[in-house]
Image (cartoon, rainbow, N blue to C red; front, side):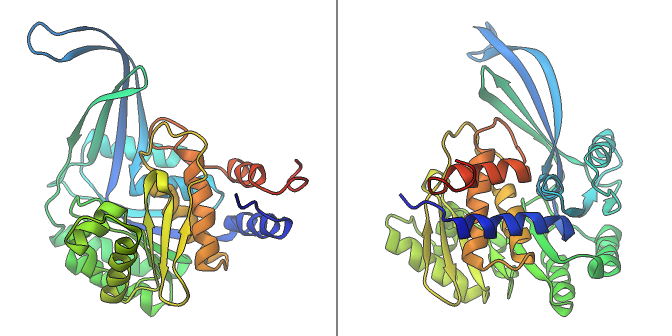
Length: 340
């Protein structure tokens, strides 16, 4: 198994140390994640479903806000931009952003929409059910105009733009085309976590991070071999004119298809996997920060892979700190490197 050299570890440390000087705009679907923690001791007499006795309730930043939280936790400045309702969930979201030292200035309120909240009921470490409250109609009217005005006003304050598409309506064709045009005009790095039905909206971006199922949907058939994965990723690269496609593959790691150079297979470094929720958010946050810090696409992808290996060991959408990321890198280095 490949081990990181002293030079590798030194370069990763330099990249992580430079994160604190970077600022990333995250445009997309802003969400609240609610977790209801409890115990199951019996089955309902009304229907064949478990009865969960809830003993704890917690709220976390979700969707594009989780990407912003990953960026902030790594010491960089995050600027989430999206639309929320005029409801108690919007207040929860704003309060959590402030609590995590993330500016809420990019929250655009629209009384006609609900603030998205995903509620997960968890018992003994297992998710029993999830229910969602949301508005998913394509963004339009005044809310769309305000989002674009905010992007234009703040684009010069950031090093990169992340597009986070969860299919909740904010990332719609008109808005996306204009945001991309603004970012390209300022020569910003653009990273996209896509929804498969919107793939062809993301023309000329720096990198896209679809999962293997989304790539298969775009390709039009099931991917059954490595060669088929490479063919599908290459087709997506060519049709979107992107600089790179980074396919996340769960426990199989990642696959990088760059415009220039050879494809790269990146094996997972996760020691234990408890929950993959939010792992893609961590990947795109670290990938984008590393690119802003001057990393090559391959090195940025490998660093993002290590970050994903940290967060999947926790239950629920988690974030990675600079210290935890460096510890993971050091544990995978050659003997005598990284304090071993």
